[in-house]
Image 1 (spheres, rainbow, N blue to C red):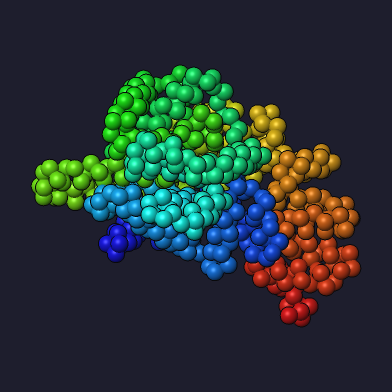
Image 2 (cartoon, rainbow, N blue to C red):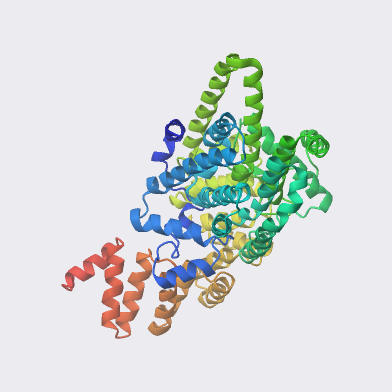
Amino acid sequence: MALLTIGCLIAYQPVYSNALIDWDDLKYITQNAITQDLSFQGLVNMFRTPVMGNYHPLTMLSLALNFKLSGDSAFAYHFTNLLLHIANSVLVLLVVQALGLSRVVGRTAAILFALHPLHVESVAWAAERKDVLYTCFALLSWLYFLKFRQAEVPSWKWYGVSIFFFVCACLSKGMAVTLPVLLVSGEFLCKGKDAVLSALRWILPFIAISFGFGWVAIWAQEIQGGMDIQYDLDVMTRVLIALRGYWFYLQQTFWPIGLSPIYPYPASVPQLPIIWYVQILLALALIGFGMFQGWKDKRVGFVLLGYSGVIFPVLQILPVGDAVAADRYFYLASVPVFIGLGMLWDFARNRWGKSILTPSLLLVLVMAGLTWFQSGLWKDEVRLFEHAVKHYPESAVAWNNLGAMFQRKEKFAEAIPYYEKAIALRPEYTIALCNLGISYGRTGNMEKAIQLLQKSIGTDSTHAESYGNLGNAYVMTGRREEALQLFTRAVALNPRYVEAWYNLGIYYRENKNPQKAAEFFKKSVAIRNQFPEGWWSLSAVLFESGDQAGAIEAARTSARQGNPAASEWLRVNKIN
């Protein structure tokens, strides 16, 4: 275990200096009021509010504790993820031992899990805390279920602990609903096919919980747009894409070259590339082999049943997001695969002896080196998405994200070519159209900005940010009443749209209605507590309304958050 820990600490060394990247990290951590509120009401909000299309209150609680202890220090989030990954690697070893397999198999599986570069995305991306956390709970649940099933006198305590950790896993990420498949595959490996039916009475409660949380996961995706269909594909095409994905993750396991944060749909979709059909045929052959051989050899059945069951929900039969695959989807699904490779290595060691040790060690070193390299790619958005467009130049998402990086640095003219490239690849890409409109507006071309923002609304009438930014453009061109309607529509579509609430406050303040303005400013800072401009504007309208105590407190909050204007006002008025 010590060597495993040291190996992880070295292989993932680049993450220590990696930043929080503005690709979900900030929306989860520094811009999220839920993460910054550990009050009783804050905890209630965690358990009733989906975030970024996911219902994972324990993940949000974990991030909130991180924020409480270390603020926006990127190191703290990355190091916590790494510690959870190390814990998961140790749990893989313990699960293998509980399955009755040799220590050699356990150590091999744990090393592969710890150091394989396919896991870098789950560890080096702060926003993927959900991956390492739910897997930790899922492996604990599996471990205690195995303890329960293998005890001479079954202990209800172990069964209850297993159920508890399973619920915790489901509260950390919806992907945890696949754990019952691992429980079944474990029974098959340990006791054979005849024992599986008798074990179902113990597994059925897990399946019932899975159905409940599966419904919650779909609900969370639907209400926040996570299941928006980017490509209107027929069922057969989606089945073919799923089969290709089934093979793709296994291919990446053995040849982890060209790993990317984004694997886009092919530009020719719904027509698929020829190489995809080769991968589809390989997937069908593997599935056929598993169905035939799995009944004869329970080791084969364990690996293919476990892998197939866990990876199935993310093979894009039910579309999630706009990527065809993602490294993070393989995190838990890799466990049965690595256990299978551990059994294969144990067989080879027994047959060929020490002659395979040197090449095996070299493979581990190469794997660790690839993990070290991949970890460094997550240093910042530029490095990450330049790598993505290098390997997948057809990825509109990657080009858009590169543009967004320049936009956040207020280099709007430099952002424009990246957005235009994204739109050339996907002409109705709502987010890129909206971002391009913002950039043209900030460079002074308001006519072009309005045209693009109107087009983005035309491609997706539910995209709140398009309404909000078109409202900004109308304000800049004197069309304030139309802007009011757009801001109102934006917050109706997205009640957590901070900037739109803030702009409504500005509108009513300019129209001499400080009470109404205060109502909207309060909404903005309730959603994003770390919002010095919002607190400062709230202070001004509270002062205008005669609420001096409230105005002073709001000004103090703004000053604490680094607003020099608020600090100066407090100093001039001799307010501590």
